[in-house]
Image 1 (cartoon, rainbow, N blue to C red):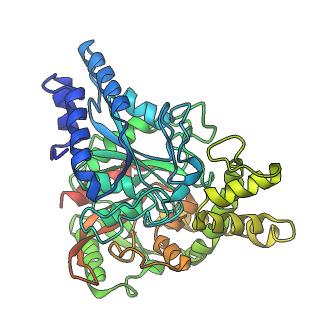
Image 2 (cartoon, rainbow, N blue to C red; image 1 turned 30 degrees about the vertical axis):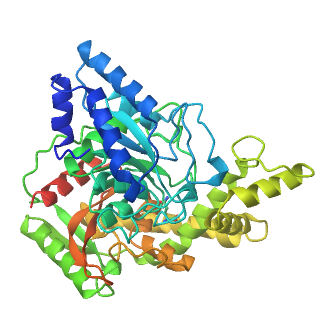
Image 3 (cartoon, protein in one colour; image 1 turned 45 degrees about the horizontal axis):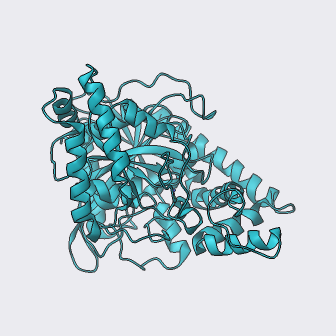
Length: 477
Ligand code: GLN
């Protein structure tokens, strides 16, 4: 929508009736229709729904309401249900499935005056780190069309980075907000597990899934986070804690703030040009008044192995419902067993099938204790390591990813794709709030194009406010 204003300024102009939500939505739709072809951030624009919602916001403004996100377009990852529109999860299985209800997070966007705008591409069922696992389209990194946008929320990140929308929603199970935010040079926040209702989020790994915002700045992201956070009776895992407004910033510097640098996340293995950016970022934190302290997470090295047992185990169970009877795709068979088999063989892509196989194996009797139970124990130890580290520091800083956005087809071996989550997954297992924000550029290894890198910050459980305050000071440096 080629608008470079802040979310607060855009909402203020709608609240003051200088612009209407409808006019903004129309401009955003026209802009996406014209420019998204080259990027592929959106799977659908849903023009009629978007305009109807915009009109409902205008009606509320006319009736005297003042709304924090008045008229602000918010793109929605296509694993979030939106009544009356297709919610595909990037899968052939749900390609034509029309959601009968709307996710709580999306309803809260509307309640705050935001206009849900289009559905964005993702790795199938949110499994992946590049968007290449989507069965329904290719998404390109707006900063370099021959590079991936990251994943799994690649479409939501690309839509913001391309300035097609000021805000978007994604979901993060093991890094799916933070890694694409890093690759696309924007801010992405994964709230504490339980902070945002997952009602209407199609489940991948239920003990890890969390919804969160993308935006161009920390302040923009904080406004959307404030709108969506909070208890929801329809999601029993959502936590009943008053969510304090994070979008009011008071801190000018980082004095008194102890920032933990994890010794296991040393920068030595990184490309020198990447490493230099992170060294400079840490030096900036110091210059802003923070004290840098070394912390250790001895069990973090088991995090990837732990996650890649637990997440597939939960996925194998969650995805059992896609059987050709109740939802989505159905391929006829000779009997019901044959129908299940043919539907699932045709409906799921290779990565989803791999996860279902791994997960089913890990949960099978005879292997359950050796794999699933052991992974749960490792998860407990990893969370305990973080709790201990946070006795010595207030925030943990690290890279969000080890490289800039990679080329399409560069990670054909699944294990190399899984390694992209090296820095994000330990935090996910511990349920902590975490974000990625731009911290500099490094030359693309193949053609030298300057590409963004993300600084990842993590805070103790429910300390989103602290996290965003620190990020905001860093951003303003
Ligand atoms: N890349 C990780 C995976 O493939 C994380 C995905 C996510 O956070 N949804 O599982």
